[in-house]
Length: 135
Image (cartoon, rainbow, N blue to C red; front, side, top):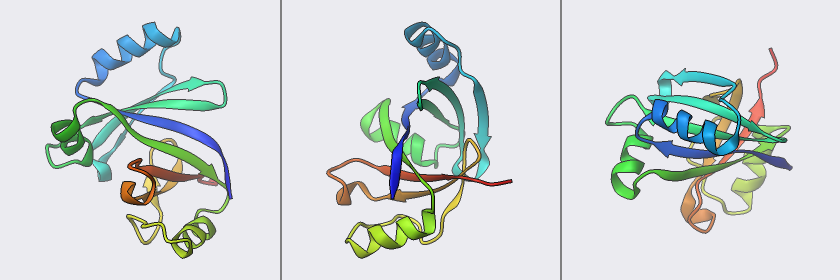
C-alpha cells in the first residue's frame, strides 16, 4: 500500500539557477545532489517536513525531462509516493487497471527503487512509486 507522499519532481532547465531560486523560496539549501545516468538527469533534493522537492535537469536532449520541458516547459513533472513493497504495489495497481511504464522496478535517485504509472491512468499525472533500497 502507498504510505505517504515521498516527493514532488520538478523539471528545470538550469539546476544551478533552480537551486538558488528554491533555496530562497524554501529557506533551506538542497541536502543532496545526484546524477542518475540511466535517466540522463541530474537532481537535487530539498527536505520539506516528511516529503521532499526534487529538481531534475536533463543531461541529454533525449531524456524524458528534456522532452517534457520542450513540450510543456518547466514545472511539476511527477508526484512520488513511498511504498514498502514496490513489487506487490506494482502487481496490485496493474491488476486495478493502471498502466505501468516499466515491468520491473529500476534504480532511481535518492537510494530508491522506482516504477512509474502512465499519466493516462492517473488523471494526467505521472505517478512514481518508490521504495527505499536496503543496503
